[in-house]
Image 1 (cartoon, rainbow, N blue to C red):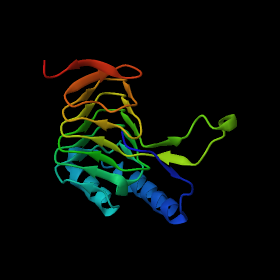
Image 2: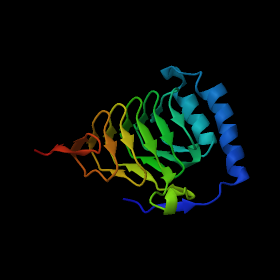
Image 3: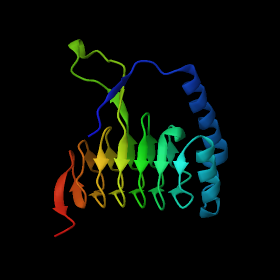
Image 4: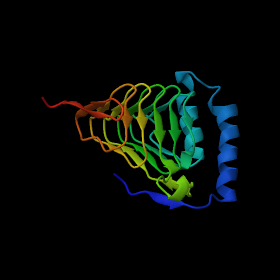
Length: 181
């Protein structure tokens, strides 16, 4: 797991960039939903600083919070209605896949403080290694690495790293089996 980092203040420049991306996403990204416009969507992400391979796929209905903190390798896929809430870097190595309605969350608030007072934003990156797959409606929490070839089952909630070539499911996710058996 990646260490968490506290962010006390989000700059005005960052807010302006996110607002501009939001307008571009609504007007120029989301309306172009067919495979014909795949390269158009990737070009827009790259224009906003994403490091995305031209062979990757990002569906028009997917919501990427901050493109400049997104890295996608060859053949990686962000499926329909996926939410990538990336206040920290999200990396999808080659052929990694986020199925429909998956939610990747890189931010939250520290708990257990006196009187449960909210502290500053806490962030940590998320990584999907080569060929990793998050199933439908999977939730991936901050700081997690999904190992090479691992599968996160539908509706699973992942709060700890997933070893390579394992299948996990449930809430919280537990190992169901190894893919090497």
